[in-house]
Length: 194
Image 1 (cartoon, rainbow, N blue to C red):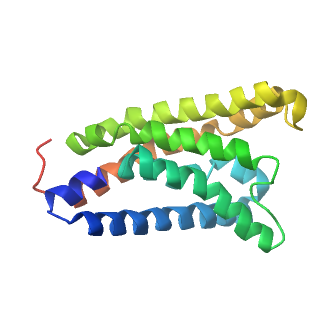
Image 2 (tube, helix red, strand yellow):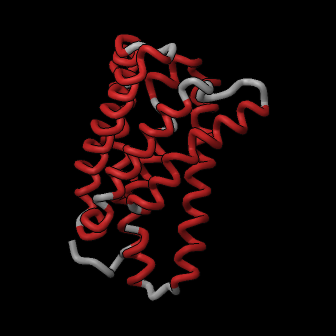
């Protein structure tokens, strides 16, 4: 959607890359800060319940498309891990990092596949987010099932975490599309007919 808005406003290729880089960096920064704030306010269970890192990643996919969203999805948990490790309390923990990076990559790519449809009609953000959530959580659970004998995680443990996170997923299934619809109306005002 962001690409479409930039194209409609005759932004040059180099400036498009610069804008998308800045937006990606902002979303990654939000994906690092937001979980810290939730954990400070609500503890570790708050993170499992509200899934704060997912919000900027889903926005990134819908807004930036699959390729740039993929970068946001992979770099968000990696940057969070590196920064919080330097501060003495890694989030996500090292054993969970590859699974979370894969899950968020799926979130971003699936939601990013809808970016052109969202540019044409903002309501497409709703199925984009819901399908991304289903695919991402399914990928996470599937990866755990495939590696269960070699990791500290079990499918039962991850399924319980997924169930705990239904609240956060439900809120984000409404909130993210509303944010995207709002951004779409700002970015593409008078450019696209609904």
